[in-house]
Length: 385
Image 1 (tube, rainbow, N blue to C red):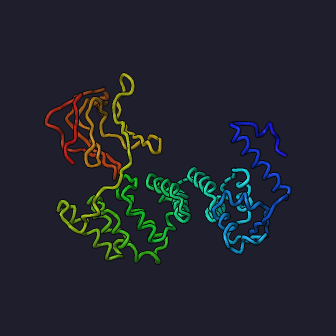
Image 2: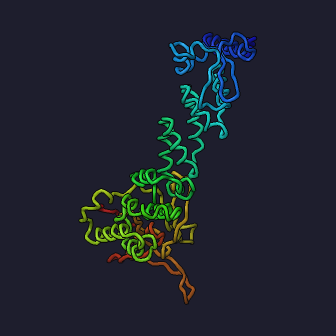
Image 3: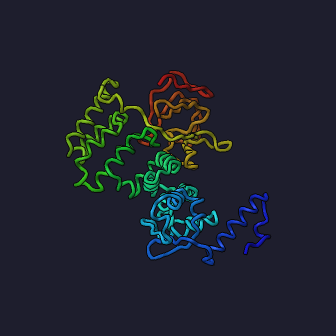
């Protein structure tokens, strides 16, 4: 029977509860005083009605109500996996459930059906720890099917945060048109620019081109086309084979170009020009490396991915310059510029009035008009939108 030394831990109430559960489980294992058999497939599991009723509203209603099953000794459970049934009955007697990648997809539906909510919570927690760009869409759908609100919320946030990685995997390409539309409408997609969303739509279309090409125009209505650069819109309008083959898509891109050219006065885009959530980034650019070396290199840190990523260097090596962000672009202004003469090979340093701009859409730096005065150790502050 129950080993006193094993269960003699905690308050008297906890000790008693542990002893009671262990004793009931030992009775079950010896098939003593069992008054019901649960059947799933070809497997039968002996149990006590009172134990099952105490931990499951499903069994409580079955055994205490006026259902036919309340009088039967053998209960056949449809749509319950055989291995899941064993785990759930064990849980009723032990309070423990071993969830693995191999059993979670049958265990969670069974726990949901039998209203063993604690097992359902354990399964949801397990799946939340398995989230990856390759499976998060499937987990989100799974959570929605079984009303796992916490898992649904967490998987949705994961999809938003990792959208640029999610669209690289097959699960994304297998989304239904309705599921894709719902995703494209999300204001919180973490993208460096709307071009990522545009290319994601084209990628989904190409996966089953003949079947999906007719949906292109409808899907592009959910892409915030006016946020794309005029150059990209023009290039896509003129050279992209999918756009050129679909009249509705051509009209959308043409309207987006008009919107940009007339500074946002096109009413048809009034609800589609709000930028999505951009990734949070901390940029480190230029500066000194030791006493003599001056840098032109640029890198940024993304807290959500916990990594530094190097991007294109500035055109000049700068330190003691000003930097600011305006309209999603990064500006480096003035400062002290250092280098080595191309012909003389002699080092030089001077105070600069030049400015350059980093565009995340292109990943490149370009020169912008210089200041009227050379400056260093100054402040640069954006004003307005």
